[in-house]
Image 1 (cartoon, rainbow, N blue to C red):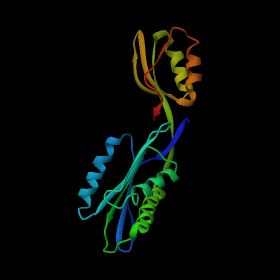
Image 2 (image 1 turned 30 degrees about the vertical axis):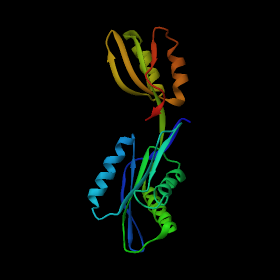
Image 3 (image 1 turned 90 degrees about the horizontal axis):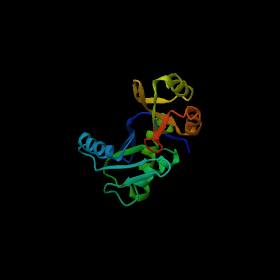
Length: 205
């Protein structure tokens, strides 16, 4: 698995109505779980008359983790239907939040499941879904005389340079697409004077 699907940017305030109750959906690309709480708090302030702010998110690719939160709705009537849409679209590094403003008529568990699912689906229908690559961060250390050789390899594999020190002894921190790591390292190993260090395992770009 060398890539994953997520959304390009936030989708906000997508409205779904069911028997006078309003379900207002938001979808956000996420990098970490730490982003979730501030979003929920902001939505509670933005909608002080709301009864619930339910949500689901997923992070990671090889070993994804997720959470679905009903925020006081009957068990599995809100968070799980929202999460089901994340799964249906095969997304990760994404969170969907649905604000409910009660309209005076109880929907029942079945009605809630349908309403939260529909709200999440409408948000994702408006989202731009993109494919992103998994990358591995690598440190290169080499003499300046090998700089042109290294830069040629970096250009060939469309590699992102995170930081660089180009002195007599050069140090480059780079992001290599996971699918190209073996070929890239093989090419650099033609020059044994280049030291290659893995900074971290594959991660999401």
